[in-house]
Length: 304
Image (cartoon, rainbow, N blue to C red; front, side, top):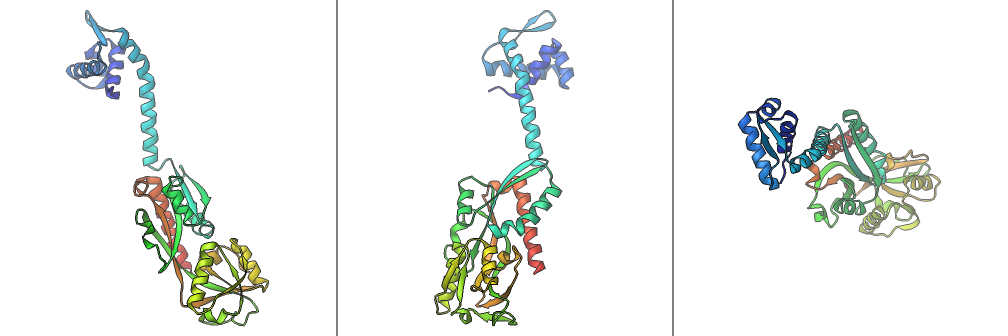
């Protein structure tokens, strides 16, 4: 195996014509130069230098190796610089996948702070709901995934192979029209009080959670409308077409007009987290992204 340090010695000998001169150029002794040249010739299996009087002359193999050495050393130097830049957060790339309400609340704050601190780090954002976002992470299609899971839900072990960074706890709230009988209720409302209402359901996972909570309260919700678009849910509720239950983060991601939020009992919460693979957690740009997402989550919680 050819080592880069041996190539540097060979180039110095070729340019100066002697071991002693090469040693002075490289800042080492003549015996050290001689030893490294012997090691290089042993690696390639053929002589690279012949002595002619007081000078050293390259063999044909030596000339070929010197000809390639410049490009090899330049490539290694460029690679070392690039890796050093990534390690020092002067450069880097992070592929982030987030669910929509996270994309419009936590992610902008986190990425703005990341860019201010490390302008050379680039983040590419895509949207996907869990569990799809988690599968993208496991398959190597992203570096960080924002995800959530409801308290007490089955499958808590599904993230055991991942690094889990908690961001905040998000509570489900009811959305009712401004003119609704419960719109100005102080305190919490039992979800059973909405049993006879028309319902507007959100994303499939939130819809499943809604049905589960309602059935736990003794009724099945009559779902008249279903949409993955949170502004559409708010608009339908605001138009008096029904009531809805959404995560608080989803409500904060839009400008609710014509609706009121009402706290629900029993309380239903979901845990918002950032996920990555154990090896990726050691990458400086990924670690910095996780840190900023955690800070954004803390700020979001404090603002409530």
